[in-house]
Length: 143
Image 1 (cartoon, helix red, strand yellow):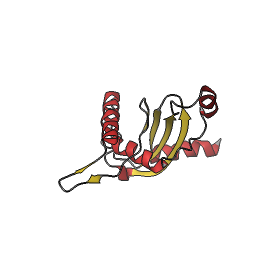
Image 2 (cartoon, one colour):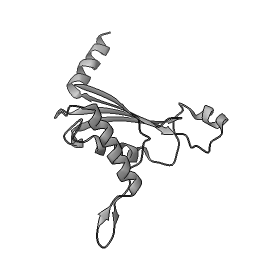
Image 3 (cartoon, one colour):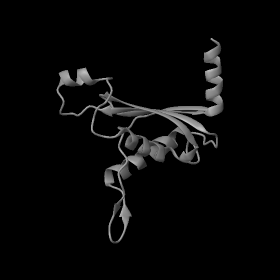
Image 4 (cartoon, rainbow, N blue to C red):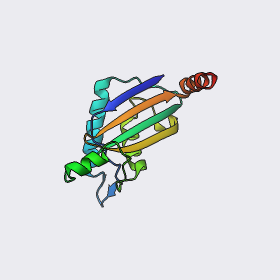
């Protein structure tokens, strides 16, 4: 089973939960990102699976608006070297996809993630069952 999607939303990093005397909460930006991404995913009507998965995610991080036109042209499509860790982008996205593309993120046994600079932020997501991956790899080896 192969599922692909482009989420037209600027990637956001997962934030650490904030703990106060009375409650535990996540920062507003992260909470809003999770809600918005979940709404986008729901509208795509994905089918959930219980298979083990290989997931590929490309994060197209928006170039800062303060960058000059020349700088934006230089950065477009290049690997992103901002201060955000890629594992935090991955966590935010995988947590939002849980329940829609897979039952639990423990089903993901292989992962490939990349981040690029882009004028428009978006996330390109692909989930592939290991059975499908083995078929694809078998075809590739015989050719």
